[in-house]
Image (cartoon, rainbow over all chains, first blue to last red; front, side, top):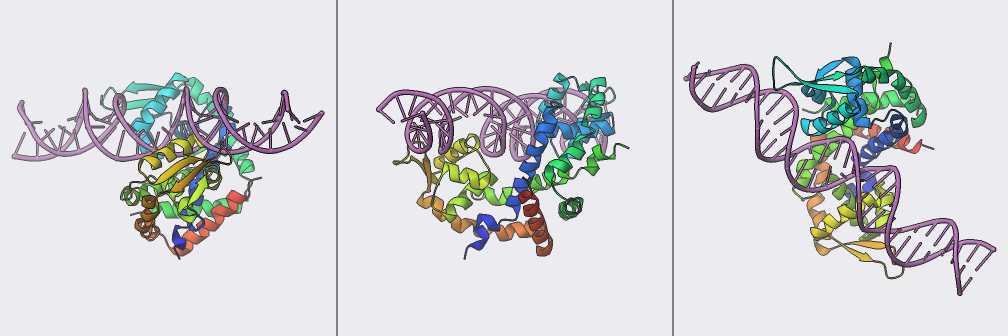
Length: 141
Length: 141
DNA sequence: CACAATTAAATTGCGCACAATTTAATTGTG
DNA sequence: CACAATTAAATTGTGCGCAATTTAATTGTG
């Protein structure tokens, strides 16, 4: 009895472990770019679209201003982005890539491939996993 | 081109999102027990075995003393555990459930079922996901 | 047996992550 | 047009999570 409260019966614990594991695998690759994983996610968003509002970035990455404001200030300190108040709506802050930030994309090109190698998993398993995870993410009401 | 650096092409990002999502789903359930998710994990370990060293808990949950020491102090403040130096080896700290900590298990019994409901996912999908995640976790060298 | 190497926790420091609140600007409604 | 409601960021506070270092105890080796 009480099986369901056994740590090995937990379904969510392995996902929590995997998420941490993945970030740990990213670490040495991202250290080379002087980025953390959440910072890398923000850069991915900006590499797709040079300027975004804090709000848009937050909606894309599921992060609130409490997380993003200090993170973006650190990216600004590294001279990868600029933060400027919108002229048309003073509440909005536009985040834009600097030249340096845009150029960093070149150094990031190899990361997806390196991660695949580091994870040591077949493309099939990873694809299945991704589809299943996205299905579950979307199944929320 | 540059598809691999597109945020929607990322395989790891959905896993990162899912892990956060799961913890968010746990939150209201764990609030009722006045526990955070990592604290809940530690309690799961102790409910299986009333006394464990910091080291053992850390190996089970993949957490180091930098995370566990303050977390365990908070559990101690809530009077759920005691922290005592081992007599046979003064380096070791034994973490034991208090009566209150042991009793909390009763209130936790309903959580796995409630989580299943909250996640709104079929048992089959969850089982497939878990097996795949564990396979990937084990595939590391 | 001395002493280097190892081990276990604790500590320090930094960066998320998020709840709750605050500040300021904009929008909607009577 | 005034003013309540809404929206966008920022701020405050708490709790991980982990790297790096420190402290103290134990073990291994010459």
